[in-house]
Length: 407
Image (cartoon, rainbow, N blue to C red; front, side, top):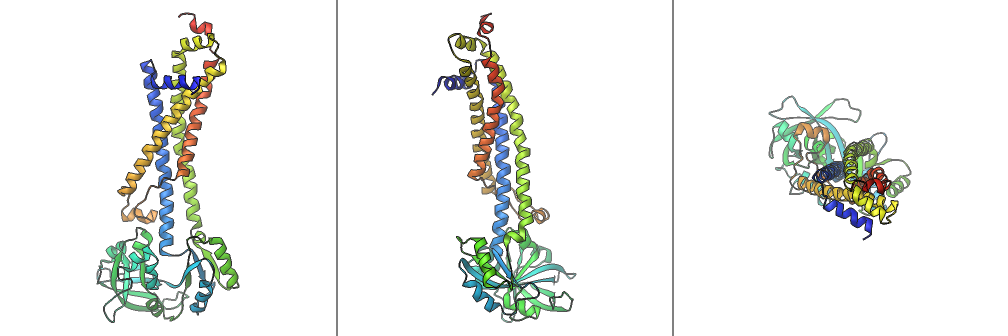
């Protein structure tokens, strides 16, 4: 350990003046609070984005193939073409319809989105397994059609497992309301944690959705799940090429680009705003250094008179401020990470339905990434180091004669 670093460490551990000690503790505490706030805020935004992305992909797919005008008349031929593409794990036809649901307790009806899927998909998707239920199929009494609803929708409609509901949809793709109505039995009330599904979607068997729409054998689009190691952009380009551009091909990023761009921008703004707390805490570090320089005038004068160069004296206080920054930063990182773990472990940040409707999720995990922690650590230590430059230069310019005149 170099001499300037050793002296700086001794000043930090054993300040001789009570006031300097108190101001030093406050400077460290301010930095700890700032770093802790940065860790928690970054973990909040990262966790929110990850959870939202996971739930979007869990219930849908990475790539969507659809007819630009109208529905896909022969989905089987298109499925064969897609499934033979490298990187594709599964391709499934889907029917989307908007409709109105009525029940005994909700005679006026509620608008819903209806999604017809193949029940076999639940074997490969944990979220769809929760949606469809433990049986892995829309299992209803003989002669009845099965439907699954989210917990928020079930509460609004006043239904539970085994209840009957009536679903009405327009019969054609042009949107003319020539109603087609069918009765369904609720086979499962699911909870995904994704408010959009839990409050606004009905899931039924693909064949039942086609029959309800009056379009047997037809699909609105094909959802394509990829292998975990597949490159999304490459698979998308291959699908466009293999279909001769007769179908539109998009991915989940296109469908949600505006949302995730906004979230990334919000995270940047939040880092800047919370980072001001760290910046303000550096004023305490400056105060601590100035007071320490004043307290150590005699020692600085002795060191200088014994031959210590100005750069050595400057390094003492540069090291002192940097050590304050390192101690405060490490403490803030540890406390912030622990708080994030506790919040996530016990789901302390969860929302009632009216708030979940705005944020799309019912609870938020706080995810700390090594990259985020590294950026926060570098930023905090750099700011603390910059705060030491002026006081350290002032200490280096101290005249030893003036320092020792009254000693």
